[in-house]
Every structure is written in C-alpha cells, then in structure tokens.
Length: 406
Image (cartoon, rainbow, N blue to C red; front, side, top):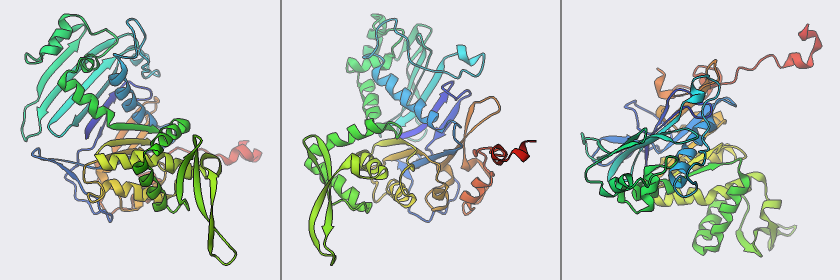
C-alpha cells in the first residue's frame, strides 16, 4: 500500500509536492461507509481512496504521470536501455534554474512486513542520486539505510552482500537504477519492491486503445469473463453476455416482442455499437476487480469522464468499504465532477487540489489543510472558489459581442 508519494521538478511540478494516504486525526462524518485501513502494529491508518480536483491544465494528470514515470523507470531502467542512452525524463522548463536540475521522485509504501522509502534523482543523462530505507512494521521502529548512491559513490548496508557485489563489480550503469539492476539478479528486497510496483496499475483514459487491448485479453479466462459480465450487469448497461468471436468482442442483449416478451438475444460489435461510456466501463472492469480481489493499488486519470456520476460513486464506495475491500486495495484518481464532493464519500484528507502559481508551477494541497467542518458543503464551497483550484474564467461574452470589446 502507498503511504506517500513525492515529486520535484517533473513536467509542471517545480517545488516538491507530497500526496499522502496517511489519515489525519480529524473527525469525519461521511454518510457512506468509509473505513480506514489500519496498518498492523504501526499506529498508522491509511485512507483507501483519494481524489485530485483542479482546473484544466493545473497539473492533475502530471501528478499521476510522475508516479507512472517512477514505476516505469524502476521497472525498465535496467532492461530497456543501453549504456549512454538518454533517459526520457522531462523536468520543469518554465524556470531557468530547474531546467538544468534533476527530477526527484520518492515513494513510501509497505508490503505488510516492512515500510520502505525509496527514491531517486535523475536527469536525461544519468542517475544523480538513489536511496532506499526500510523499517519493520512496528511502532517506533527505526529506519535503516539499505543503500545510498550519489555522484557515482554508493554506500551499502553491511548485510546487503549482493548489492555490494553489484557495486564493486561496477555492474550498475550510470543511466540505470541499482534497485532495478539488483532485481534482475533476484536480490530479495529489490524483487519485493518490484513485485509491489507490478501490483500498482496506472491508467490514463486518453489511452483508449491501450485500455481496450488490456481488457479483452482477460476474456479467455472463463472465471474472469463471468466476473466482468456480472460487473457489467451491476452497472445496468443492458448487457447479458460478453464473448470473443474471431478475436472480436461481442455483447449480447435481450430482444422482446411488442407484448414485452423476451423472444431472442441480439449480438453487437462491442466497441462499435456500445456507447463510449460502456466501452470505458468495460475497459476498467478487470483492473477494478483485480485490485479489490487482491489488495492492489489502481491509479486512474479522469475516472469520471464518460461515466454517470452515480456509477462513479458506487465504484469509489467499493474501495472505501472494508466489506467490499477487505484486502486494502487503494484507488487514486483525478476528476472534474464536483457531485462526488457532496455525495458523502470522502473524508477531508482524501480530497486533494492542484493549482498553478503565477509562474506556471503546480501546487498540490489537501482539503484537510482548511479549517472547515466535516459537514461543510464541499461542492458548493469549491465551486465558489473557497479552496482555489478552479479556473479563472475571463469575459468570454466579449469575444462574441463587438460592443463589449470597445
């Protein structure tokens, strides 16, 4: 599970921003079931979902892109690059100083046994810094440094013999991570961290074809197919069955006569005849089911686009409720639909906002930072601009009214 994620100097992010799943001591009064996940023996409680609101171009998606790069670079830096190849990182370019400085990313997470804090600083040429700390999941447990790398010099914990061997034999390229390299040699801690990362999915709904292709490959498994069909029926999409025919996805609907009697069923080409919302819901079905079944983390950009607000509300509720989420799955998503703020779904420490400053840099902050009651009308107050993170809309009418332009 994720505890915190920090990013500095990446895309529209200039100064360090921190997104936290650690709950605050604030008293909340959500009307829907909203259970915290108690991290055993640590005294730490985690929220199960978090949402980011903000104006268009405020950097909501860039927070998720920062995490996506964090995951991708850890997973692939050893396998998918050669010595001397550039690293595809993009820092904050609207400042004359940061354009020449590295990007810094760090996450704190747990596998249930340990809490890890792992991060790195990287520019387009090499890894400038990399660090890994660990502490056992116990109250007041001390954090232990497993390794620290800076400017080509790496110190390793005395008990981490394989890591020390990789360093001594100069097997870690300057454009690759020690952690990623160690995982290829089955170093226990590195493998555990990469396994946690593989259980974290980052989905961008602008990548429709990627989502679609990932969705259809699971239909060959009959058990999963039945779960997806049940999930479709749950959403009242009118779909009775989903099958694969000649590598095409076909949905089946009931057909009735004029007296309302069911007489047959009709097959439709799924991605041609079903609505865009239905296709999106189907594309998200397996990732959501898999996350809830196995306690994984899922990150979704614009979860609410093309889906009805009540349907989005129920998806979020599945994650918030310990009855439907007994294994501690987590959901992080961006949204524009302010109805969700008034639906009794969220604690204040689950709601985050992005806003750009006067110099084009993204700031991230939580509703928990405001002195407001848990019963306050969050949707109304957000739309009135009380929390910021809303667009500053100019006089659009003047564009169409010549008299106003003079």
